[in-house]
Image 1: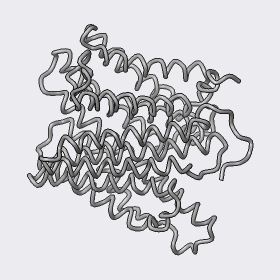
Image 2 (image 1 turned 30 degrees about the horizontal axis):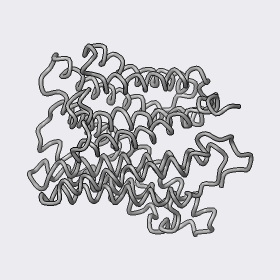
Image 3 (image 1 turned 180 degrees about the horizontal axis):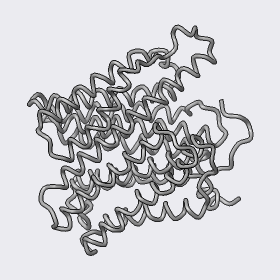
Length: 393
């Protein structure tokens, strides 16, 4: 099987590769714009809007697409998507990116239609698979895809001139949807993968990760509510209270997940760090709702540390496991986990320290590019090469 055919043989291959490449490309464009040595994305929406939109609905949607096309067949014990569909879905995602990049030269309605097409295509495929073995805890993820689509629609409504001041709502709603999705998925896989590793290592059962049903229910309720509150223009104090409580709940959840035990296992530690950034970002965002601190700091901790860090962790683990490779992060990838964490912390600090704002932005962008460059370098064989016959570790 040639490389081209192999890329479309499994969902994780083309979409994780696209996510990594897009993270690097958009990061470079953003760095050139900030440094003043490049024109920036002036062919599309205003640069700041373009940057936020493409991180949420460009990069993250590719990562989500690869994950669901890989995970849902496993959840439902059904056949994975065929090459034709994967190629169609990837083409839809790419068309959306090109439409937004060249938005100034295209009719706004066309840009909206093309960019909004990918999520329904993905959702319809997932629905057909989930219906073969419908479980509420899995079917629920379709609701998050609806949230994500509505958030993107709000952005396009303002770009088309059909609504006022909805783009910022859509961007925040999209980010909160991604964080909610990570809270649910991360809440499943992080303790489960840690428990499995502890079991293999002979750790006593009393020390395995544990979860409280009450805490998990509260976390789920907040995950479902926060994007809606954000997009429905609820009062700032209510959104702030929900985000603050959400962050505190994540801290409580993680306290019994055995994160310290994972310090010597980067591929597990990265999951815990991504969830920790979720907790920190939500707490910072929640406090900003009450006038304490800077909301921009909280949003970037969520965007870089939680969304960027968690997708990097999940994509690398899934690529290794589903290509038949041992679940051990290559050293370059382990370094990438550290760099994305440093990027989130530096972006937070830069927001709080005005005199270092631009240097912090530029350094943050460099760390982001380096982290995803290492992902592409380390995982290239897993994404583009043949499946190994030896079982994953």
